[in-house]
Length: 171
Length: 100
Image (cartoon, rainbow over all chains, first blue to last red; front, side, top):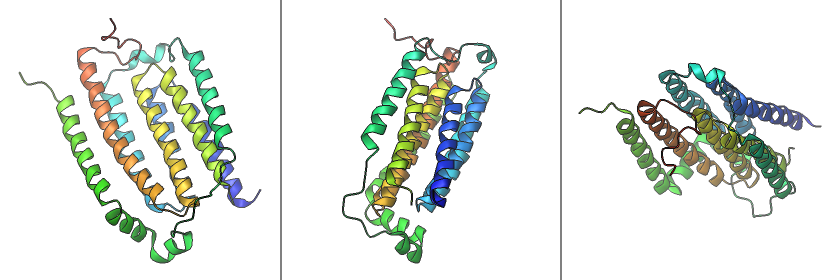
């Protein structure tokens, strides 16, 4: 195997293992911490795929914001008695079967996938010469300007919704 | 050179693990974490396609998926806290107020 393939194999094995750990740990804090390591690995994979901006966003938003939010919510709830109870629902063997069948179908579908469409202009060399942030910014503020504004609206709704839902009722 | 299909298979496997966690776990927080895991596996496949097609659209889609995931986590956890105030449990099989 060549060097990139060895790196990819490391990332793949680690990520699958970490995913299994995330969904099977009893203590939610442990799950969140394994998820943190998983997100760092995903960011490393993004660096492989010529997406530096999204690797940074992955670390800052997912690892820095969303997982901290999860940890705060776990802190607010009293989960002491969870640790002695059953982890899985009673239909969990069917869930295992569903997951395995789903994985087999997906792998059978995508295992021979190849790139056929005409290739775009953003090769690794052009992005390196122009600068990755420059490329991302140009595309984001021209071709994707309307979705970008709608994304800001989605975030506004999320802010207001979270405050309204979680605040204490004042009678 | 790593083939495109390897990335997509990795994405499929992590997505399936997320599906299993979503269906099997009783703890609502870990159900949310499984949703985040599925979103991330989709992001991996989109960025892989974006790289191999030499297009920026996949990366832009991932940017918006991350935005929506952040909004979803904030709203979902707020609903969880609001529910926990009325009914102190976060087990999905005990949250059955709508059952007839």
